[in-house]
Length: 104
Image (cartoon, rainbow, N blue to C red):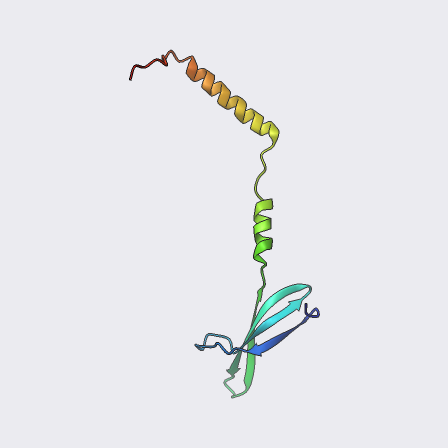
């Protein structure tokens, strides 16, 4: 990887509109990687300058892992309670006076 607090820009050969960056690349700041874009502009006084944008590079496999790890985990105690509730509900329905031998 790059040296911390440094990066590189390259001419954007795929620029199709004025909103696309003139240059793009990557940098690393405080150990975090960013996409870096730059546009060549001209000030009201006629001086050329670069404007920049930075967007953190997100590793999608890390995002998926975080999503999986953040799912609530049902404890055995609450699972046992739920099973007990279901069994009680089933037993209550059995005692309702309905016959199971319906002839159709």
